Length: 105
Image (tube, rainbow, N blue to C red; front, side, top):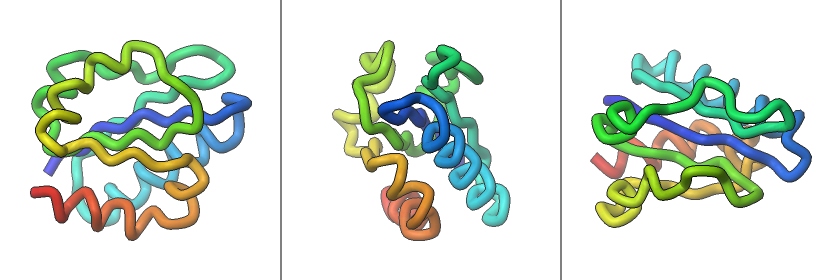
């Protein structure tokens, strides 16, 4: 299984990176390939390319604000393979979040 995600919070600092870490750590525990793009106060880091998005099984938006280049995920959204949650949900409920992602397969 492969998951891609984008995390972004209102301030673009703490919750953006805490959500990234939570998702990455939970995926690592489960042996799931994962890459998380952050759109924070420092701009875009760990940017996902279109091929990574297209080959992923599921995409997660852990976002509290609009993100740049959201159209990259249109096919995932149309296929029902995009989960959208607040960054604080991803931090506090990461096990449930990844369970939801796995259930989409």
